[in-house]
Structure formats: C-alpha cells, structure tokens
Amino acid sequence: MAIQQVTDFRDEVAELDRLLETLAEGDWTKPTGFKAWTPDDIVRHLHIGDVMALASATDPASFTALVTDIQAARATGLTRIEETRRRLDGLGGAALRERWRETAERLCDRLGALPADARLKWAGPDMGLRMFATARQMETWSHAQAIYDLRAIERPPASPRLRNIAEIGVRTFGWAYRNRGLDVPAAMPSVRLAAPSGESWTWETPGATDAVEGPALDFCQVVTQTRNVADTALRVTGDTARHWMGIAQCFAGPPENPPAPGTRRPAR
Image 1 (cartoon, rainbow, N blue to C red):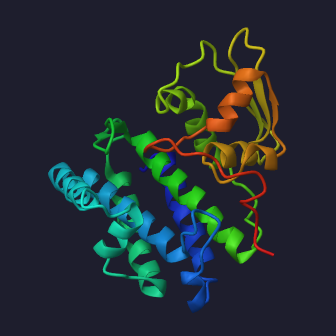
Image 2: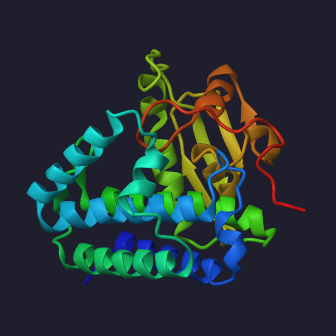
Image 3: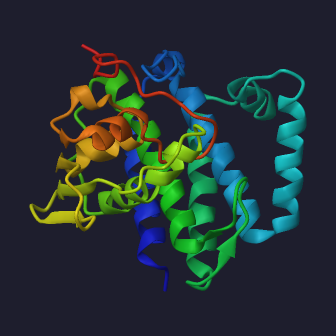
C-alpha cells in the first residue's frame, strides 16, 4: 500500500490535470507571472522533473546519466528552459499534457511500490521516499499557481495534503540561509498555521519570541515563492521571522528571490 505522501502527490497531479484541461490552444503559449514562463514551459519543466524522478526510482544509473547529460547541455550556455525545450523537441499543448500526465502516473505507481524506508538519488543529497514524494508534490502545487493566476481561476479550497508543503517549508528554514551563504539563526521562529480543516498546525521552538502565524495556504505560498509575504495575511513577529519570510525557499537550486509585492496576482 502506498504511503500517504505518494497518494497526495497523485492527487496533486490530478488537480493540475483538471486545470490544464481548461486551457484553450492559445493559452499554452501565454507568459505567466512566473518569470514569463508559459504553461508549456511550466509543464515541460514538471515533466522533465518527473522523468528524472522515475529514473531515480527505477534505475539509479540511468538517473545519473540523465543528470550528466542535462548538465553538459547547460554548460553550452543554454538556460534551464531552453535546455528543456530542446530536450522535448518543442512538445507543447495537449500532447505535452498527455505525456506529462502519463509519466507522472507511472512515477506515482513506481513510488507506491517502493518500501516506505526506501532512499532515492537526486541532484543533491539522497532523499527518503516520503520527502521525495513531497518534493514532487510541492513542485507540482507551486508551479500550478502561475497557471491559476494566468486563467484568473480561483484555486480549489486547500486540501489536507497542504500539510506536506508546510512541513517542507518549515524543514528548510536552515537551508534557506545556508543556500545563500548566511549563518543560520540560533533559533527558528515558531510557526502556527490555520489548516484548511480549521485545526492548527504548529511547529513550536521552545523559548522563541519570533513567530510566523496565519493561514497555511499563505505560508505555503511564501515558502514556494509564489507570493510575496506582503501580499498575504501572515503575521510575522521578530527580526529573524521577518528575514526568513523574505528569503524562504523550500525548493532546491541556487538562491531565488520572492516575487516583488503585488506582482504575483491573478490576471484580471
């Protein structure tokens, strides 16, 4: 039986697929608020990530070879998006959606067949299965936001699986600092979130006076950099908490800055 995190990833894929079904042919090439990436660019990016993940979960040697090939292509001066476009030979639109969905479903099937204590190779350190599945869910969830904004469609009410993304957001507190070459503060701010169900999700740091409080959805948007903290209802108390919310980054890769206030909003 698949662990809950794999089931949550599968449900995230299904939700994004329902959104993609609403795209008209011309929508796939419209720039979104995320670095002007189009829905084609976003789904290509997710698809290549899932291809890499499937390779890691199936044949670690092929995963290593794929990473090496991608790095070699990037070394020629291609950007990440340019390399992905070339690798997929410009695949886009409905055909891209079909291939992405098929690969994501195969990945979910494969992850669901692995033992709960499995560890998988990735571009950085190896990851346990739970974190690996959560990372794929987080990528899918966060990139979907740009397409919701482009379509000016209200996102479905947040589900309990949002807890996984909040968890990875909290766990990467230290990473956000180390990734920028900064000293990690001695104490992480306490985090107190209102879950979609109305319950509270809390991560308390004994003795901490700094805190981040508010809707779980808003916290997840900030740590995935789909919203600036100024555009949320989060209450941020203390210098460390304010600084963290300004650099929070729960995804791998070089340091990225959050969107400027007011720039990541739904299209009107």
